[in-house]
Picture 1: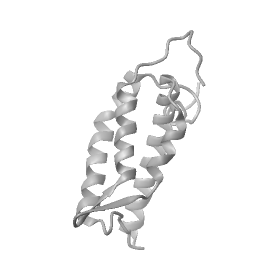
Picture 2: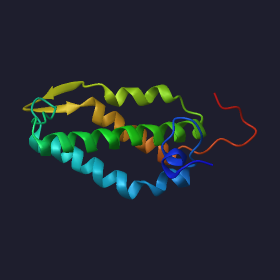
Picture 3: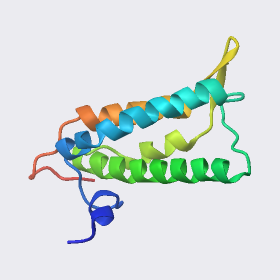
Length: 130
């Protein structure tokens, strides 16, 4: 039995689908805000933070959110029997120009991993987890 962050945001352990879904009221608005920030403030598909206190603060909070979501989704993927290797793809900065805009492959993969975490069923107790 550990502390609250260790129970929810550790690389090891399991997160059942209902526990993962409890975080969606926070995850969905934050992802919408991140996509809106990318849309309105992005340059060539990335956001550059200024070296001021507000810029560094927003970057630090966003980084902490991404790491926490990575650990939570890793635990969920382990419970569902999915490979956790897929979780490193959202950190890739691949931007594809589409007209005058850029399509962020990393943001798309992030949304797909959240979708997979909420829809894939848990493994039963007797099935092996790799």
